[in-house]
Length: 284
Image (cartoon, rainbow, N blue to C red; front, side, top):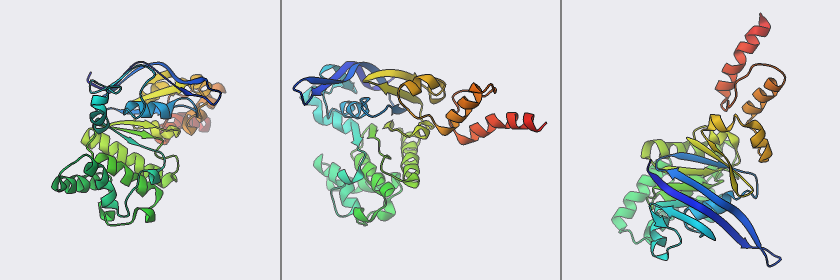
């Protein structure tokens, strides 16, 4: 399998207030397949945001090795190429919007890469179309909704033509509509354009479109698998301090009460299908 990112025995520590060191990640080994959609879950302090910054070279590991397309992120000679390959989107879109007009904001990244003006125009238009924000190209970013701002921030990263998008809780500050808009955009970019997506989130329902779910706990990888497989491990997720999806939690409670319900259910339609036989049995 072709892997775009690989972590080999990666650890990361930072200086603590008491002049000691706090270890955030411990001997982490994982690979991200090219073209995949990976979701990373974990409670606050589990190391998710640190991992996001390691994936595009913003942070460098204190031990071990991170490679992007075979390039060591600790090698300064590859710094720009690594950041071109892996685009990073943060939680608050206001921190990434730098211009007073949407299309100028999206053009900012390519301009700093030295892309010729004609190609910048093409990239900006393509990026805004990709996130369904082209009609707002002349709008002022501060007048947009939270979801629209985040899509513009994503467009700004797409315009730099990365192979992979890493998003650190991009929907955390959005309302349900904004979260849906952003998630639909990510699914479209992954399936239609083949962009590798690594989504860090604390919303369990955002794992539904993923190929793979990673669960971090205290800086280590606690679980790794397809969404349905990971959400079969209810006790493990609770150990990690994570809230279960409402569907998974409901079916688990019914199962604990002695009713035959399937494990690993995430979506509402699948939950309904699982409950129908029980309801019909009660009616009969």
